[in-house]
Image 1 (tube, one colour):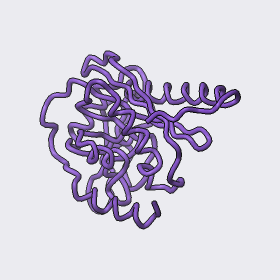
Image 2 (spheres, rainbow, N blue to C red):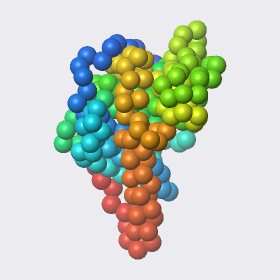
Image 3 (cartoon, rainbow, N blue to C red):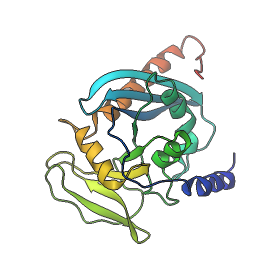
Length: 225
């Protein structure tokens, strides 16, 4: 797939993004994250009972890198592995949390929106850094936030999830609004800056990467569809 084709896909999927209040109370949420090793993408999905934050199930999938690293096109590099990991979960998540952007994206379709639309699951982007837009820093207390503006509209909340720590950039992905996105992120965050499902997904992706790096010294890696 070339860049022009990827741009056309983004333009088509962007029209399908729905920014609406969450229709039902979430019973299960999943944090998803990806890691890379050579030509491999390691996608991880960690399912939690919500709002109790009880771990339920983890899954992963390994695919080959099929798209170059280009800012703004993360979905085409990580998406297949993440979708496979999500669909391997025995329980379908009510909300997906992504370490990336939702509509706070140059094309209005970050990875949270992209995969949210493809799977038709409410999704939230929870990024550690800004991709686009301008904002005034929020207050220093947990729960305080300020709007991030891009293209003349609010596309993200710059949210403190802990007192006196760097904020996260929380943007609507699909089938949820900004108020609901903030609520889910805050209820999923305990004593750390990142929501628990995303923390675990990040930990497992790094753990799998280390294990695969060791395994590759001795025998060929198996790709899990």
